[in-house]
Length: 404
Image 1 (cartoon, one colour):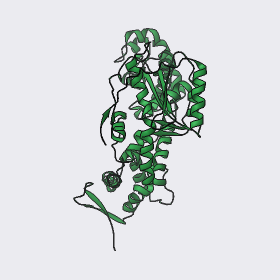
Image 2 (image 1 turned 180 degrees about the horizontal axis):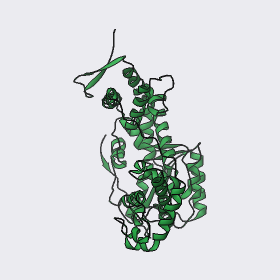
Image 3 (image 1 turned 180 degrees about the vertical axis):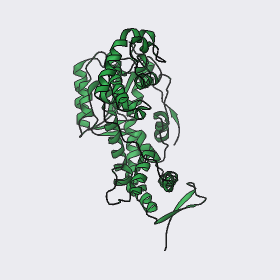
Image 4 (image 1 turned 90 degrees about the horizontal axis):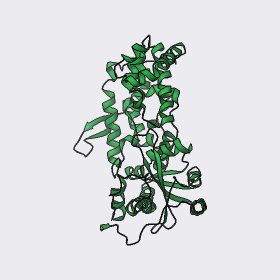
């Protein structure tokens, strides 16, 4: 495909700032049944990203209608509501951050999301191909990314910023149409739908404050009282960070919070002496932290059971099973991360070693298309029905059925 740079002599349209225009755009998208979506936002110095621009594209695939809507000046709820309509297809590239922001700010969960980065990964185009390289690969157009890292919350936006922003949705419908054709030919549309929906489910809701302690590295090494203190302090830190829209480390970094709760001090002087504790935080919140830890110790969460160490017979199995997964993924040009995580593999091994093989664990690797792609191969090897042989293929190994 020939390469062409994207150039235009026309000035980009001004951002939409009138509520009636937003309603008209939403109606047009509703009638089209599909639209491309992209967001520009600011994250620097913030805990929750600040939405700065909403771009949409719809209609004719080759020459779609495009619009940039200014959320600082007009309500964008009519567009967000489209995201929650299962009958309307929402096309996004690398949707994780966009879905998280929409979930946090609007409590919205995408119902019919298509992530073109995921779609490309299922066609052997790389695990996380960027939007620009994907557009160039599919359409031959080389995008100007000069305005990518700019101040999106400042007004007025420049013509360069608006052109860059609108290009982020201008080519998405055409890219998705080409990817969809290839996916249908290889019977993989369902794979993309499944993985895109898993992404929407995972990133549309914020972790509740009372569960934030489980995101602190080392939390599961604490005893019950320490864990109660950590849950209380971590929930307080989360609420304060969201309220002030400042990163959690503005109050306490994880290591300091863990040390504080591992050996709770008796008084405010002890709080100040905890390594990493800022003097200002200790002065303003020392007494509050002591009360939080005291209350938390009285109502601790259940201490999770420690994961048993694999017996010697199973300690080499993770490498073998990972090799099986990677072999199948290379053969089919699929990124391995969509098939099984290391945690999935460990869960399967732990279940197998229990000896009770009638009830399979609920892991994605053993369900639906993932089972067809690699999960059954994993089970066959565990059951002794296959072996792994080294060869000179790209994967480096092959799966050989036993003949006896």
